[in-house]
Length: 79
Image (cartoon, rainbow, N blue to C red):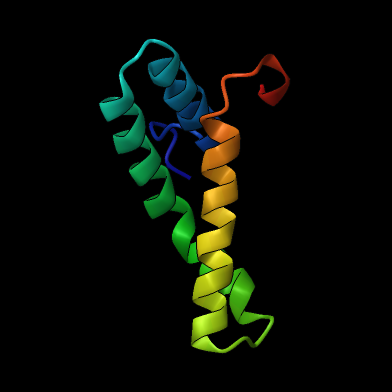
């Protein structure tokens, strides 16, 4: 693992911090980076379920929608 690469948890922290400061553009750019990092992992996990391509895409889309809902939630309980 690259020791200079930020952990995903750290990227989530920065997404939340940028969003809280009103810098939504940077928050969404970081969110896109996070998707790029975890997309292959998600696809590998979904492949184990032997879903159709359409169902796997739907699952991934739902997963990322739930992720963004949680990450961009400003309520203290979401931390």
